[in-house]
Image (cartoon, rainbow, N blue to C red; front, side, top):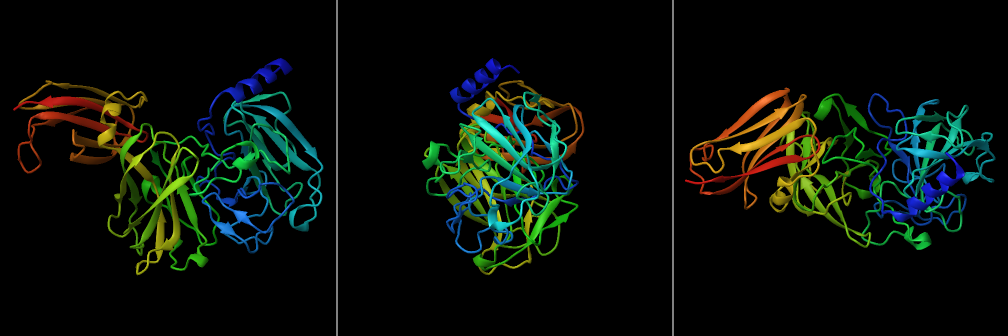
Length: 471
């Protein structure tokens, strides 16, 4: 890419608002899908090598004790003055480009002096910086030789940039993954760093004080997010256990605790909300023993000013094993403005020794009906055809076709948003199918004349059709 093209890329990046653009996590996934995040961005002041004994996490939680690396609280915070997210992984794990970009920097150079915590640097630090053409820049630190890219190259999502190491200011092998907005330069007094996991506190993000940059969720996700998907993140903790069952045959557990000071495990989901409206928010509960009766799901809705409103829903995870269970029904804004956080902390009086972390999905309800009928996002593996006859007074048939095996949910909804019929079908085989309805409930009662909606929910979003019933 020429200097002129690079200049145009940077100019264009300043001109457009940002949607989530990170298509994958920045590493080759292990067999259990993701490495946990082991070091957060310090929202109080994410500048390197200068500490003020206050660490502020993405959910607004503050830490005042043991916040200096490498002695920060295991599973809770790490560390004061940190500008990126750390992912611990085996040496030589391939580091991948999470989005298309252009290589601005790729070299081994002198690390910070002194290193945080007074540790001794491990030689020159391997660093890569990518420009993504949208005012965002991704930074990769502690790479081991050799680097797989050179300055001036274009990279695509999934390309190998290099390999995880422990060069520079690092004791153990890990990737320091950092996002900067507005500039790729390192500025210790007014940092450009933002948090790709967003900011979900009820107060303003202190990062905005520097350049007006706001920390937003930057990972591309869907309306159904499993525990291994891009819209899910598990954070470091000492007692995570992975189980080989549940939705898509895996889920995580952590020991339930009742004292907030003992909390060491948390995870978050950010489903993508296609259209503003009412949604059922549901969690998959796998089969198993000792699931807690008092899991506390924290539901965050982001306001226009960047702050969030939080609602807590207590869910009995022992009550619906092997199926989705309703967490809450809420009005959600379009875009990546809704998050769910689940911790190991359970409600007072809860029984069961384990908190379960598995798939989360959102199902559109009443106020989404018109949007669903005019759905712009196409589910490539499902075709839904018009109802026939329409209107009908005896029986109506709606044909749909599945191009590949998928988990689907079929719903019949009236204009008041009430679900009249719902069926979850796992591993529905590819083929053509017909839904037939006679205008009656499952107990044989006739429904009134009116307009109804037939909806199919797949792994990403819904396709729906309206039809009229005339008796």
